[in-house]
Amino acid sequence: QVQLVQSGAEVKRPGASVKISCKASKYTFTSYYMHWVRQAPGQGLEWMGLINPSGGSTIYAQKFQGRVTMTWDTSTSTVYMDLSSLTSEDTAVYFCARDRDYGSGTFLSWGQGTLVSVSS
Amino acid sequence: DIQMTQSPSSLSASVGDRVTITCRASQGIRNSLAWYQQKPRKAPKLLLYAASRLESGVPSRFSGGGSGTDYILTISSLQPEDFATYYCQQYSSTPLTFGGGTKVEIK
Image 1 (cartoon, chains in turn cyan, orange):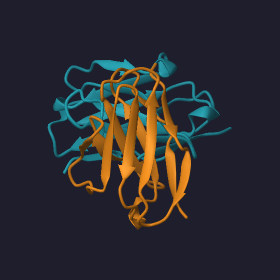
Image 2 (cartoon, rainbow over the protein chains, first blue to last red; image 1 turned 135 degrees about the horizontal axis):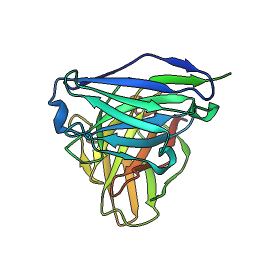
Image 3 (cartoon, each protein chain N blue to C red; image 1 turned 90 degrees about the horizontal axis):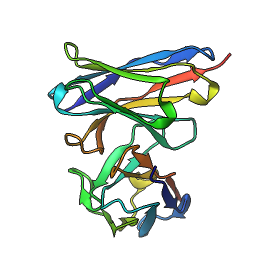
Image 4 (cartoon, rainbow over the protein chains, first blue to last red; image 1 turned 135 degrees about the vertical axis):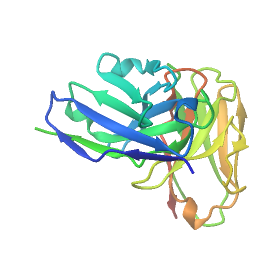
């Protein structure tokens, strides 16, 4: 069964950056895109972007362009999401989610979520 | 960007009720629509994709339909474990976008 294990909760000051990891297992890491989705407290789901672990190509939502960087490490089957210039609006739970099928854009497997709190 | 509008935003229903949630896209999405269920403090769970295809392991009381811009999720007989928030999501084009959610509460 596919497993996605994310790094732990973070508390950051406004203006700082955060880097969250998502370690994948029990499937071929390079065969599926990985997405990042966030959810602010009491709010809905927001797609941030994706990375193709086969080569590292990325697509970011326009809203996060210039602030987000998604990277990968094939040797550890881990993807990373780095978000900079944090504000209180970035307080949210961040999920990694794997495509159901290669390039499908539907999310079958999810990480457990990482809470990022931004506060002065 | 394709905007996804769900309705209602919340509803109250009883066990055994038939529940329908609608999702409208701002442009045609060619059945590239998924539905998710989310319970508090949990990650979402994929219920259906391609508008009407049931994900493996999902009970058959969940069904989906629609075409073009308008889609529906139906729960034929609401069960206690179905009280949750439901989201639609289009994957016709990036940015991938979600509806605002429908919270199904116990009447």
